[in-house]
Structures are given as structure tokens and as C-alpha cells.
View 1 (cartoon, rainbow, N blue to C red):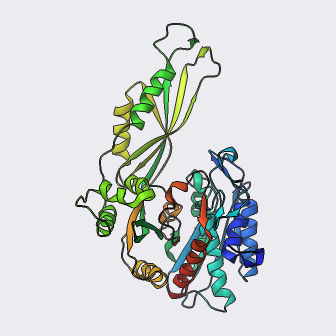
View 2: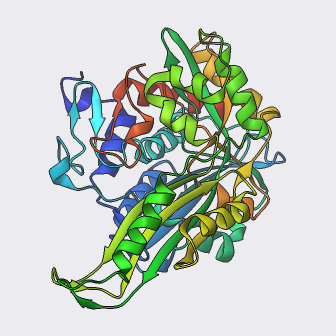
View 3: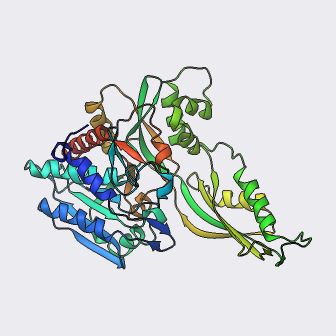
Length: 433
């Protein structure tokens, strides 16, 4: 544990500073805004001699970009991107103030420590490593920070791609969050490199009935009808839907574990805290995330609504929506609130080789395995410009740390030495690719 402020690695200080900006995004256009965090990030880039450009299409929803000239400007550019917003945190549920950026037990705590102000800090300090040493990356690097990722990017990356496509001129590949981190089974460790993302479909269920007095015999109850549909959908055990990426993942993980079963779920269960995250990548998931109904204890409302977060394998959206309609029944309406594409790119090519090699130089002999992430990133927006996106925020993590469980969870935290490791790996990648 560093004893003084000066002893803290720069990547830790920057991540801590970013956490202290409350950029909570409640969804649906309700957000605190990213402006102050974007101004901090822009000032950091300016201190390196770069010229950031800002785009704020909606007040306080600030995006920015800076291009770092590479040694070979004829090579296609690489986009290195993060988002500055975070999901809300209920302070009463946390052991620490979620926006204080507290350092405790060798870890940095706070909302965004995992998703994704850790990677934001790694991006900034990796670029700083090169420029302060008088070096350049191997090719142009387009450093971008988006707003509104936690709302599907509708007020962030989607608008940037639509209105500022020139920001990404010459780019063919991108790197962002939720990949490059380690998981473990016993004393065997592996790194997961994200080469795909599930499709996203956010839906609202709506049940209708008759309003009335809470004391009456009342079978036409909207709340009851909705509750039955939500329970049925939330309890559905979706079948396996394996893609090429998921099959490669299971094959790679199976080589590290004991036991005869090679069923994807059985293999995933041998990776402790990461198991639930891994299992979500093998199938559709339909998680209820919100309920709204009623306005007084003794009044039966005529409408009840629920929010469901649906994730499917790429291309599986229509089939899943048809199945959902059958599960909830004809008396429950389904409204699509937001829908976005899934992605899957090959675990091959020069960028993949260099990401694997960079990890290997800093943690020799540990396998790197592709995976399809259950969530989503701003790579979905960049895909509309023909940019292939990967998840590579390299972190070497303790085997017993439930890292994946802290995405949008309570007491989010990241080890300080993992941040230092990630900065070094990312700097190495920018120097060589």
C-alpha cells in the first residue's frame, strides 16, 4: 500500500480522480452528465501536447476525441475508447462512499472502478507513457471517450458515429472494455479476450386490467397478470446457443480444468466467481430489472409495467422475442425500448496476435482465450462504420476476487497492482501494434 499521495502510481490517481466525478446515468435521458469528467480527460490529453475535440449534442452529455500520430501513418488507425458514465450507486448499500475513490486493502473502491474508469485511466496513462518518453505509437491511435454507454449509447456513441464519423477516419479496429482480464480455476489462470458481444433488446412488459377498490373480489388485476408474466420469464431456463467464439472458449477453458464433463456449464462452474458471467454467454438471458404499478395501498391500478433486460447471441433477437411473447402470453403487451446488434469478430489477425503477445510478455505462459461477452459496449456503434471491436482492458486479478460480479454491483473495486499491470500491457501493445 503506497504511504503517500506521491507514492500512488499515476494510473491509480487518474482512475481515482475519474471516480470522484459522479457521472451517474439513470437511463432514458436522465443522467448527471459527463461534462466535468470529459473536461478533466481533455485537460490531461492537452498536457501531453494533444488537441482534444469535444462534441456535446445534448447539454452535459460530452464526448471527446484526440488523435495520437503514429510512426507509420499509412497503417490503419486504431480506436482506443472508453465511456465516462457509470450506473447509479445506492450509497447506503456500500461499505464506502461510491464516489470518494477510496483506497483500502490494496484496492481502489468506487463506482466505475471496474466499469470502466479503470480502463479510462489505463488508456490515458498508456498514451502518456509513450509521449513523455518522446515515442509514438506504431500507428495512429484515436483516443475517444463517450457519454451514455450505460444507456446503450443513444445519447453518446450513436450520435458521435452519426454526426462526427470523421473522428474515426482511417480506423479499422477498436479496443475497449471487458476483455483481457484473468480468471482462474484452482492454480490455473487464463485471460479472456473479448471478440464478441451479445445482442441487446430492452423491453417493457405491460399488463392491463380494471381499476378498483383494494378490498373487492377482483380477478382482472393488472398487477397479478404482470407478476405471473415476469415470474414465468425470469424463471425460464434458456437452452444453449453456442457460437464459434463460445465453442472456442469452452475448448480453451476445458484444457485447464479437471473432470470428465465438457458441457459448457460444467466447465464454467470450475472458474469460481466468474462462472455466472461465463454461463450468461452461452444462452439467451431475460432478467427482470424494474417494476412499476399502483399509487395507493387500497387502489387496484389498471396498468402494471416491468422492465426486462434481454441479451441474445448475435442474430438471435427475433427468435427470442417470439419465444418471450409465447411465455408471457397474449394478455401482456411487449414494447421494445431499445434494440442493438450483436457482434462477433475472429480470434485471428495481427491485432489479436499482438494483444496475446503483450499479455504473454507480462504474464508468461498463461493462455489467452476468446469469449463472447454477455453485455455490450460502444463497439456496437463503431461497427456501423466498419470498425471491428475487441475488449482488451488487461488486468491480472486475484483468483478469489469476484471481478465480473462487480459490474453494476455493490462495493465495486479493482486491485491497484492490476491497474499498473494493465497500463504496462496496454503501453506495450501501443508501442508494437
